[in-house]
Image (tube, rainbow, N blue to C red; front, side):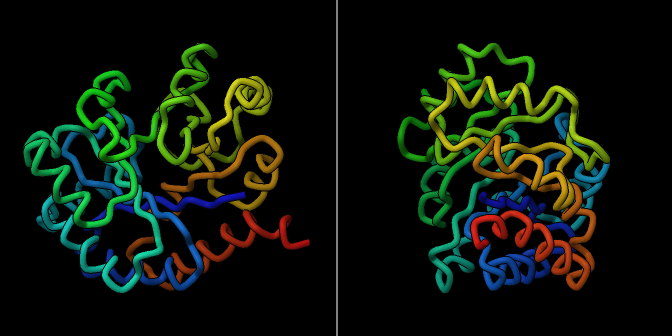
Length: 243
């Protein structure tokens, strides 16, 4: 199973983000979901909302994040970066300028949480693969359509609501994933609420990857604690395949 960590760019400063990216690369993480701070993150819970605020107070913006990725990828070209953003920061930069800079920086794919799939396909075409989102309320025909057009994976939201670690997975989730898997050929990743190895182990038969955000974001200011949790989650995601 693949493990995809999410971090917020610029939380505690971009130099701290660079340290965190370097740590994840050393731990063998193959893909990182890198958040772009925004003032109105309606899809995010309290932990990631606070990370948005912290990054904005540090003066973090999209231009600086793309430069950070450019510098990071010069010496670490293999690690893949999925840029997670709301659409407004991209509009502020200018769509064509953003696409040019993102491609030059080595961004692997985009996840634009508030951009409809149809509009995204028109605006980005094949230049930057878009990761699409599906949820428990998405009709299966629509899930199948999104999966046929998504970038490196389809992001399945585990529950209705906002991001944030949850003690238990939604009771209907596994049954939902069985139905989705019957219709979807693209790699299927599950996110929202996942924060521990036990949950990863439970999800293993039902998806190709898990996304962990809030639990890691909460520790971004403490590199030692972040590293400890990252290792635990990464080991949990791969240990079955090593047996």
